[in-house]
Length: 303
View (cartoon, one colour):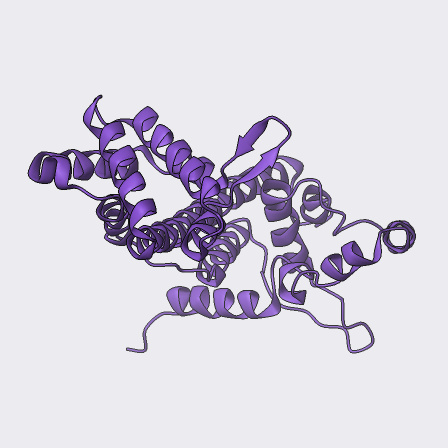
């Protein structure tokens, strides 16, 4: 679709149009890679923060539990950490043990709160502990930092170490991980469109914005070209550019399936995505900023 937009310009030869699409795909891939990297980093930072809070909550529960439960947790935790090198298997055993102890004492409020933080539940004969799975998904560097911290803590305190101190230590390591969430990707999109604008000008074409007063969904040739290339990289299976009839048929099928869902599932599905997350990949604002940016670069300075 992008190639058809470029190749139907009489001033553009087929080889030049083809190269324009190839260059656009390269720029779109780089933009998609950066968006994916930012998304991955944001998810990782949020996961570290969430896990840190859950470990701190478990530590608080271990600290304020009844004396008998505290002693049982302390003895079990120290016994696990002391009899083998502290590695991922050790931490997994730690999860399994404290979950078993809290489950056996769920008549106490701190134990129930700790189980909520662990997220544990019985799946037939298998005990599921989501927090353990989340820990396994942490970067290896974070896991190594926790293992090193616990090894030093055990060496310093030996048998006087408590379960609360262990979980506080894990929470502290996760809390010191550097990073800040940056959900915005507008700058990445603008940079991508600016790259394409430069490519169009090099090919002798004029990138620009276009509007239709009678059709609010209309997008100009350059706008559609930029969107086609980026869509092919970041969301190749999208129905964004299907015909109006195809989209309407798809909507009708979705509505029919929705009405067949249980009421409680309908309430969750009804929330949906924000309009900005599904309407257009390239907004008019992205286009305007990118063209303004590239225009400044090519405008000669006044003597």
